[in-house]
Image (spheres, rainbow, N blue to C red):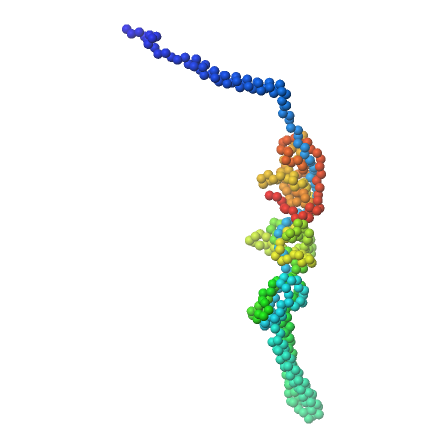
Length: 419
């Protein structure tokens, strides 16, 4: 009968697991003790050498002010282009050889100044022929008049017949008609001769001459045949500025002016290219009768005095057009308005001197300040200086400041609302 248990000598030796775990824990414990010892040493070292402790930061110092209230009209900023009131293409009414040019390209000429001369000789010959025909017709008329008078005397003395008198009357009337026709031919010849001199139709600036002296040019008084373009002339004083108004702005413009009577006489401010201020004024005197369906705008035009002739057709200018009566708005420094993606915010100091962001709706610049249309009240304390040192929810130390409106800055060509 076999034994139920094997003998101790035959059983394999089982390692002591708890002893092995204890052996592995000793290095970890040693490292932890070393770290604690180092931390403790550092603590006692700093305490012994008196290392300074970190103090709490004081509230930031900022300047605050209530928004400035002002009545300001709403106005549009548009881009306009100058165009001449009058522009004429100079063409000859008679043909011939161009003999002289009496102006410099680009010069200012006065109304009636001689510009071009065409060879006069052919037209002088024509005038002389017409004058000779007129003289012959007048001689025949004088003869017919005398013969009529003699025939009438003979009739009164019963020596002449009525038939003879009637014949002389017809001859006298025919002679008169011939004289009238000859007079017309003389006038026609003199008209052509006078058109050999081409003069300025108005005061303006000349373009470059397109035909040189010595060329044979064609002309036509009725304009039905081919003619030669000699040059162009444009008027400069006054001058037009043309611009387009969007449909929405035009609707607001019309709404504000429903109660006004009379023709349009609205003042428009201009800032020509190269001018930093809106130093020129114009009078709005024309608005088109329909909207452009492709662009959704309506064309408008203003007349600008240009006595110094500094504005030229084709040049550009910034246009300010008032579209509403003055309305109350709030103003803050432009530097106090911060862009936040598609919105704009300003910082105000609320209760317990805590910074609170406020979303606002802005307008254009006026007097160096930004117009705030919505989002602020007149009693808000807006941070106008020290903004980089604050953050929403933080406490600040406010000090009172003041907002200044600059009439000089209001004349500067400033930008519209920021995006």
